[in-house]
Image 1 (tube, rainbow, N blue to C red):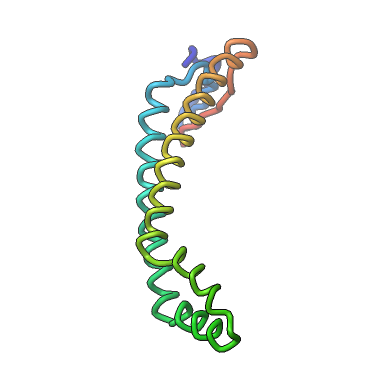
Image 2: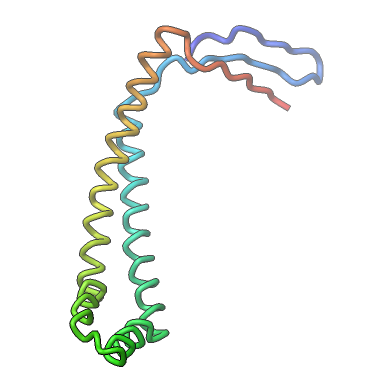
Length: 131
């Protein structure tokens, strides 16, 4: 951060400091975004399992299968193999891992890009006030 440009202080009056964010540490951004995206990935896998169990508990898959049999489309019942729990959990895990990699890379590149832009224009100015 740069030096404070203005400090207004009177007796009992709030102090105001204007700072500019001149640089963001890319390594810190990478660590934090990795941990947040891992947490998001775990939440996605768990929510996928909960959602699948709710849909299965409402007998949606069984109703679809019985409907397909009643209209004489048993060959489409094989498509229901794609929505069985092990396969759905595998897809959710693969998507979560890909999201971890992509979110970590994109946020780190965003921090590096911010550093380049901030070196050209001076960064983001922030006014802080002590009340």
